[in-house]
Length: 160
Image 1 (tube, rainbow, N blue to C red):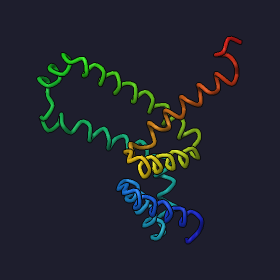
Image 2: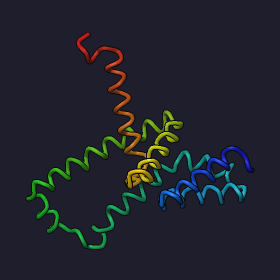
Image 3: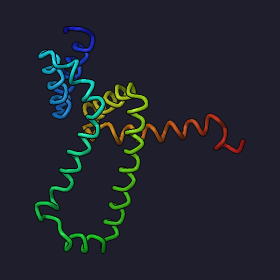
C-alpha cells in the first residue's frame, strides 16, 4: 500500500496545498482515500478509462447551468451577437473546444504525458498564480505543438 505511487500522491498533495490548488488537493485526497480503503484496484482502471468523459460532462453541466437557471436566454444571446467581442469569444470557445479534442486523443494514446501536464499546471499555479483549467486544453496544445514539431523536423514544412 505504501509504495512509490502512494508517496507520489503525498508529494502532489503537499504541492497542491502549498500552491493553494483546491482541485488538485481534492483529487489527490480522493485517490489517497480510495487507495487506503483498498478500492484502488477496482476503481482506478475505471476512473482512468472514463474519468475524462465524466469531467467533460461536469464542466458542460456547469457551462449550461446559467441557461437552465434562466440567467442566460435568447434575449442575452441576441444582444451578445451584436458585440464584436462576443464574436471573438465565440471563436475562442470554438478553438479551445477543438484543441481540447486533440487533448483527449493525446491523453488516450499517450497517458504518461499526463504527468508532464500536471507538473506544468502545478508549476504555473504555484509560481505564476495561474489557474488550473485542466489537462485537456494543455494536452490539446501539446498535441498541436508536437504535430508542428514533427512537420518541421521532417522538413516537409520548410521547403524540402
